Length: 261
Length: 261
DNA sequence: CGCGGAATTGAAAATACTCAAAATTAGTGG
DNA sequence: CCACTAATTTTGAGTATTTTCAATTCCGCG
Image (cartoon, rainbow over all chains, first blue to last red; front, side, top):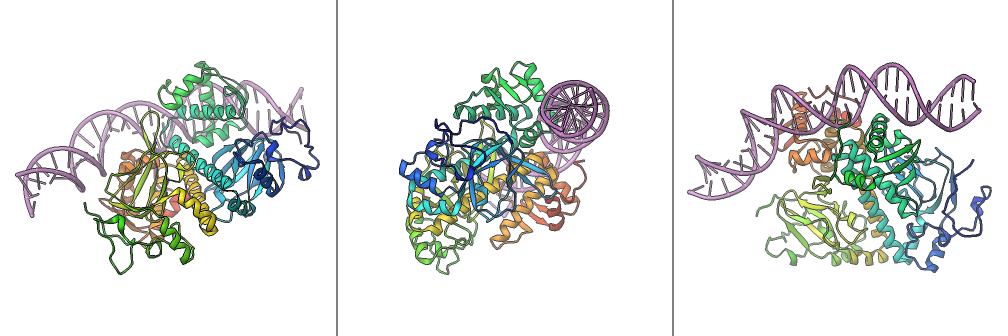
């Protein structure tokens, strides 16, 4: 199993080897995601405490499940590196992807209400997560108000994010949905220190289509059309946004391009 | 201003008058919603504490705003009686309704992440909410773990609810969306002790359409079609589900009916 | 080098939308 | 309480966006 080079650990000392992941001495303090992730804004002493409750890091190969709907809920997971998708399956067996998660983002918050997971989480590439046993986290909430406050912010952000997807699915045309998707990905990579205009799509066209409520063919046509319009370049899964301003305008609904042809 | 009779207060002593709402001695313990609402599962002593931090009840007339996007976030609101809708407005000025809330449900959780509300909340009829100052609630979290736990469940439920709407908007046809909508409303009324098969739609056809990602004309046609199929009766805004089992099957995707004609 | 999954492209079909008009309902004032 | 007006809802006809079905092409991988 190979995995892409990752900036999750910027400590000069290389502590990771694939063979003894469970025993590693890795800390939230050393993690490049600690400004985005659960420990955001915590004092060093509290970060240490958080480190102690974090169960273990867990490596997942591409296409491996982190959890499935129906699994008992015990832990939240913070993505250390790699990418995930979460999806729900309806009674008829069709899936709806509800999100793509990247480093610093939290998985499993929808499972707190029941005692079981409501969706499936799958690695889109070789990835690593920090397992955060929820019972321990709850204990710590009582002792570290700043942690509780930030946890609430993260849950609230998830609600807001989903409301934005509802807006997208409920009243945007295909081209606008796709523009929103690209601009949003770029913004999230920018937050993580990567380019906002040039990145790999870690998910298949089919996944994108499913997430955006469109077919794989529609995604393919949109990519071709955007390319012909000079909005972007595509090379397999690498996308370069050539006119981010116009894409943002399309995403906002200010500018629109010609119909699907 | 008149308002419909409400079962929110089942205490034999009538304590409400429209003129001194702020000074009322109403308690979560007396509220018929306390099994659904924030105080669920709390001991009497803790319910009393919760009562003390609840700022005031607030009456809203039909079409009145509880809050607007951009308003500073200070409080959550629990619906005591009546109905609300929440909606987001995109850059182009179009609205997307993100939910309809009824008694016992919590409003404003999406605003915790920023310091401002992200959506608008409007009363669909004359309604009343309990204002819960969030700073006070946070203080109480440290003292009453059961309250914190239930609050997390409510936030998580909101995430799950929105994921279900994403599933609806992302891969259901019009008739299935509408069936899901009707069955869901019925289930929520049943939880509150009302009929699951006969209820008033508190929202306009336009609101329903907006929520379901459809036009008002489509909703009207769906109602007519379902009526002709013997699935339901409609009289203005009163709906009677005549074949709940078939509607549930449609909602689940098991059964489908003829195309839109 | 060839196999198989993924992606692209084209043509036809379908679902839902838009526009328009009529009918019904709700709100307002006499 | 009734009449009038405005708003909402229903229905119809034509249209458009996106889907479906089908055929190729591209690429990764053994």
